[in-house]
Amino acid sequence: MSGNDEQRSLLNKQLLAAARQQGNVDELLSNPEHRDPEDEDSFLFDINCIDVLGNTPLHLAVLSGSLENVDALITSDAGCDVDPQNFQGDTPLHLAVQIQDPETRRGIVGALVDAGADHSIKLTNKAGQTPKDLCNIYCPDDAEVISRTTPALRVRKMEAVIDLDDIASDDGGSDSE
Image (cartoon, rainbow, N blue to C red; front, side, top):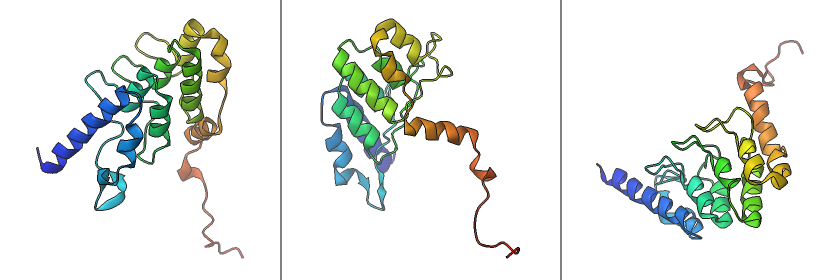
């Protein structure tokens, strides 16, 4: 393993450990030493790295009930995927709707939905359940939080329908003028 690979692996482990706890993910994300010195827009860690159960830092932040860590991850410029599935097929939203504390659950579910988390009928875990199915079981009174469609989700749905290659460009090269 090269020095860069070792450093990346160590930083990934630190990120996973930080996400398991309340707080300090933002510290890792904002540390300039964790940026690639050759490319200031890139990080030396993988924000979507996984643990032995397939959980990403976002899964772990949700499981820890830390809205602070969830927000830090989804608003960072490191490219956090809001819909990764762990080895059980659960996304962070599947886990969030099962949080027992209502205030924490609403905050985290709302943050994920606002960030564009998919709550459609297509995204099921290995038990065949969608986040909405789990919401109906664990928090039926909060169904409106998970059901709202946000601008981020509308854009993702539009991107899925519209192939960007099908859009004509206005490059000013028309000969009909």
